[in-house]
Length: 267
Image (cartoon, rainbow, N blue to C red; front, side, top):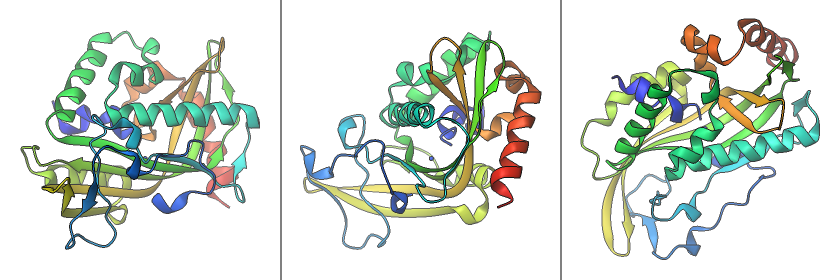
């Protein structure tokens, strides 16, 4: 099994510290934690300490923000608020390793391959506890499409600026460089930065290796017609045509991409 397949669900998140205009959730300050955490004096200027979110989930600095000046929105404000609240929940659950709850925001009901989902959870949990963390730092929403009705569900597309991290803790055994090409393929070479630094927690020094992604991206939103419970898919779903066909109609995907291109990308 390749790394690209193992990390596909987390990379949906497939999400800039400086992007916050109005956060849907106010992230807690690191001072609220039970330990003192900081980067070492010789660390690069633009890195921040990485809390262990399995131990301190309340320290997740994730933020979901909206471009209040330039937002291009074709869904109702109330619907968008629900979408963004569920998006925060989805990313936060991934950040802290709550896989069962996180997969409630994946359209698993649309695929018969439940064994694949079980394997994904097991592999994500394995790597999470072996020092590799997929972490969404934040996403800044700039476009929201209208809903497309598919009968049993409705589908929309978000356009966003994504801030995303791969954090390699000290107990990670392997070479982080193995993920570079995958990230560059997903987001582009210029969107990727690599850092290697030490951080100090309660006097103990630990090495952190990290890829940071800052890129323009998008996210499909799927919701049942019975209730506005949002599930999410990355744009890379189109690279897996069989799986994509299970999740939504090809006509829906093309219609949403066309709408985004005409009403947002060409501006």
